[in-house]
Image 1: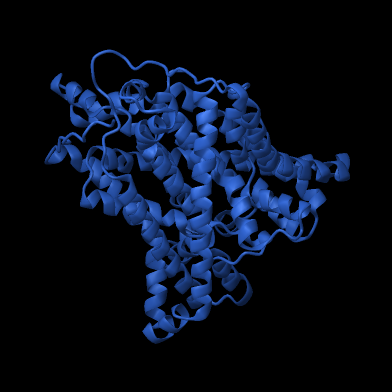
Image 2: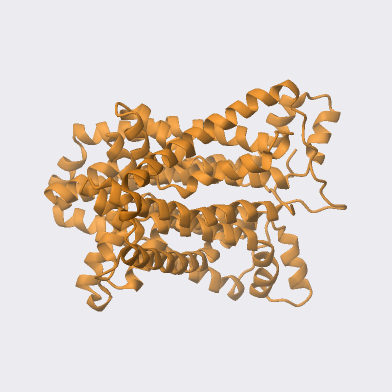
Length: 517
């Protein structure tokens, strides 16, 4: 059973002020896109805005979005928890290899997943196709925190439940699953935000969502008011998702302080169930990795050596690496204050600022990019199409990825360690930096890897905000596929996957280190 939540020590006055101020500044910057939407709505007027929002098309998009979330998230939870339990708590043959393969789909961009499936099954479209491809592309976001949490759980809780006469299933549902709640909620929120913001995947599957409608408005008719009103509805959907996640998450305590040390859990023997478990793992790997790699392999074989234009590909690869590293470092640094406050000093102000960090991740890259374009052109023209503006867009887009990982990692560091450091003469900031952040370092690395993965595959914001002459792997791939030149685009897709694989390996190894393995 979980321990009852302990009252947190709320330090008044100056000690918390720098952290709150830093988190508040980031929250204000994250409000830029929604401020842009509100400004457009005011300029449009209530009569026109209400006509654009309250119409059958918006209702259709809302139903599609709700159905997508309602099917994808629960199925992803079921798939991820099952895989995590098999790889971390059972004697599954080759468990370490299966664990790595369960994280590897993060290396494949979502639109590559979608194109691979459309190439294999041209009739795959609509809600079923969107749910299937979304699960295969995004379930690692849930598997990763759940598997990491399973490694760190103290088996003493399970032993206590078993000693009370509970069977294996009751032990799992009443002693293990409640301790996975924070990881499940965080991963589910991350997947939900990606579903709200994804564009390329659903365009290829021919499934209409708010994001596809917004981008279509900008690209086809350039109907700014209509697109921004849809963006407002999308923001409302994000706040609804945030509220539901906060309600389910609760305020329980997940850290343990006591005599002795936590034991490593004993893996359960599968027996005859090993064969169906292996079949299950093989099916998931074939669907999530086999289909995309077979498609890419076919493109590369058809193109041969002539498609490898090293002069162009080398430039795109170098710029992608630079943007990924710089954006990951910046995003992680500006997210640390909010992650610390959400765990150590929860409250009304903290929840408001945390919501500001999360909502922007649900917006399509085109909305964030257009907001920054408008602001830089009208207020700070020297920053228009500069690397600084592009990195700010990356930070805004990937704040949720960084915050989820940091929050879960900091929550595993007992607050008593900070209090002990302060009792020995450390200031609150010194205690947080030298104790909490050092122990949370693996989570910091995981957050940076998650952000780097996103930046490597980011398309819309890069196209609109990058300085002239910028060429990344994603933009070059999209340009060539837009010309139906899938053969020439294959090397760029292959390098995106190849570049992302080390980051996924880092995610896996760091999550193992968090459990001391």
